[in-house]
Amino acid sequence: YYNQYGYYENVDSLIVCEKDRKRCEVYKNDENGLKFIKSHDVIMGKSGDKIKRGDLKTPVGVYEVTKRFKPTDSFYGPLAFSLSYPNLYDSLRGKSGDGIWIHGKPLDGKDREDLSKGCVVMDNDDIKILDTEINAKSAVTIIGENKVPKMSRESIAAILSEVYRWQHAWKVNDINTYLNFYSNEFKRADGSGKAAFSNTKKQIFSRKEQKTILFENLSVAPYPMMDDRKVFRVSFDQTYKSPSFSS
Image 1 (spheres, rainbow, N blue to C red):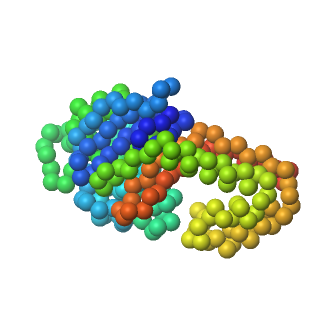
Image 2 (image 1 turned 180 degrees about the horizontal axis):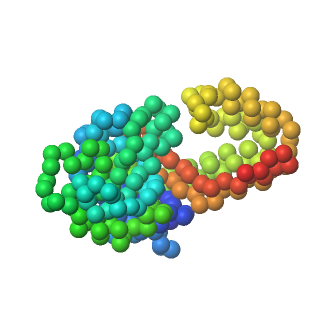
């Protein structure tokens, strides 16, 4: 499940793109971990991170492939894969725009100015090869401005152990340890901050209910940033059961 670009329990394919090198590498997940398949030359948007709709920049971050489809406009080539930009982290930072795809080149064969408009563009032969290399229903794409940060086994193990420490504090209603995992800048998906979150959790924890909390299909990805901060994206499927609530 592991390679230098993270740990993925239930992700079939990984695409790692570096904007300055104009290249995407494809990895396949099997029982021996992530295996390098092929490198593709690509065209991407202007340098710098995508901030707003129409800035023609390719976003920097970690995104799922959300759909494989045949574009209705021949400008985008024979095939496209849409990416999950903006993700929640993008939205909480006020980023806008959408429609970021990996796609081919115009079917009329004419090279145009600005083929990318923020997307990842491949030769049409390459996009057809990519289609055989990845499972679009289970693929993650990491896009870096330059080098995508690499991870060691030790750093992945450290992150996973912190995730399970957080889960344990939650299970046993240890409110202080639990809340210490959250930054003072923490925001929920609705934009509310740590104070409101803490109040809600204190009420729930005070009931001292027995809880079952399961994490499955964990993944840990390095999250490329435009500055030197080390950021990681951890995702999992969560099952939560208590006498008053289950999800």
